[in-house]
Image (tube, rainbow, N blue to C red; front, side, top):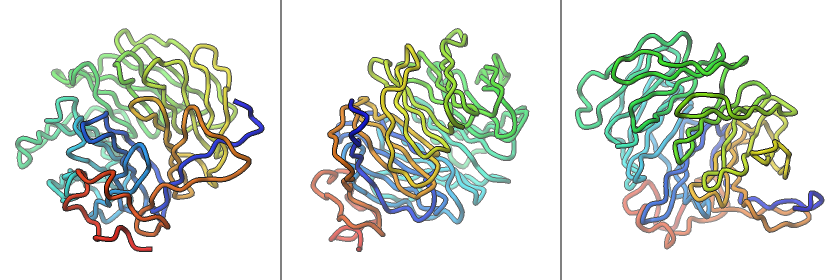
Length: 342
């Protein structure tokens, strides 16, 4: 693309504080969905394609650090500074379960089979909650060497991945034994770890480096140095030829996976970028920033001299929700008949 032109993102307003995590659902019969976590304590669900606001999950009393959707986008989960992880009905917006912790919950992840919820945080304990028996005590794996920053499942829920806030490396845990089976070594703390859609790669961001690891044999495949500290990176899920990265320079960089060459640099955020994630089909990617906005960028963008289009926003936004496009999800959610108020 001509770098003199400016890519036009969909800009999603609604959060009043920084956006710190984003998660796309797989494609479902009702389309695909995007959930966002913010320090404003109000995680939001959106139509993943249009950015239209569907609803807000109301109930946390502190910053929400992590968010995810299950495989069918029927439930959401969030981890918060209020010492809880919550599971929500993604159709109605109702809270289904609240799992109390003894300190800040930084990360959460549904298992692939959707029956389990994994959490990690400042306590240095990985917890596995059985959603079929939500009142039962969780299984605890308490050998994390530091405060937990990210968690994920891989190998059909047989392996857990975690990284720490205060030390480098990604640890891979055998779920059955609860023991670390491998450590992927990095110099800086890993702020983002993503398992690719096909299960082949782990994409990590640590310091000013983006690395790609073999998710089955754990070897390092690629390592690219960035021009600034990068907080998040995501691999294009369909053919894996490109990746995006965002960090302290406020820009979204698009790179060639095979060569590391920068293909595009998208500007628009007014604060550091905390999270970037590709949509499940790879046709677009979303970024969340300290400026409180989410921007959805097309991989083959329309370009203009300098204008931004606006997806429908949250309660403080300018555009009303496109009810017809997300009618299956909206039924019974926290939303008024005429969409969010101006």
